Image 1 (spheres, helix red, strand yellow):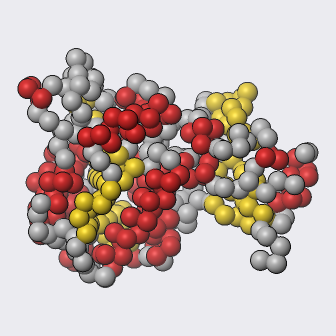
Image 2 (tube, rainbow over the protein chains, first blue to last red):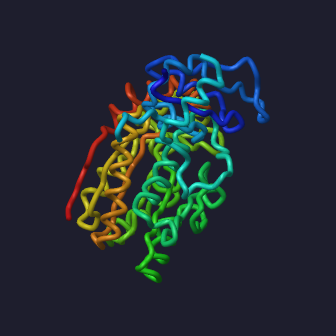
Image 3 (cartoon, each protein chain N blue to C red):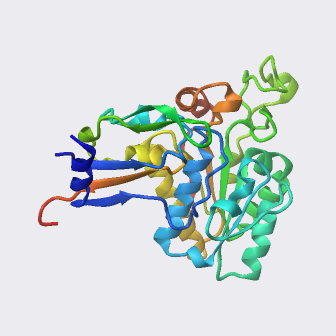
Length: 75
Length: 257
């Protein structure tokens, strides 16, 4: 069961690759498609590996990523 | 795992990172990999966390970040080129109850507006200044700035900057730290999550100094300009670590309070 989850707003993404380089779990990869602005956007390739660390959201210059993290039981 | 299963799992998850409220839904017009976006978000987050969205006024420079008023959900003034510190001074003196920040690039802060920024610092104006140093003029096409490194190629120094013809990279933060006016001067970078967290702490601290009437604070950011550096965003981050930090070392320069 994944410990975290990210949502990428593909129309904000400009394909700068910073999130792909920063992700410690290799969750993110380039899509085969282009968004409405003509950028090759990124998407989650291995969602089950996400640990919800939030590094991708922090480095994203276009604030395109929302990060969710599983809470420990009883919290 | 199927997408449905992932969606099902999300129910037990808590949102830990999202767009700050002080930014609206407009998309930034910055180039891919530009650090302006990260810095804008950090400022918006600090405003949210301090609960000062309704009482904050920003002043925006001429440059890539000229459209701050489009992206921030706060009041923003867009003064003439280089006059940001002066206009921020006016706003703060007229309404001392507001939190006023000046957001300036290296063209605005260290070139056309050097006199305004220097005197605002020397007076110890109770404002918070963000100085974005990307070592050239980004919006106009990558010309040499006073902050350009020795040997750096720009559109106006195709052979690289030489000290003999163009002088040395100007160290605004160190220069202003010599004055008695400023309270807090620090230099930060935003190329990895650890640095981003440190920069975030510095921004909040600078806003707090202003809210406690402690006086002038300046945060210089080493920012990447991948397009005008002729690099991809990942290489541009490496350049900051390897080259730019050598000339402009990171860390707090002064803190007097």
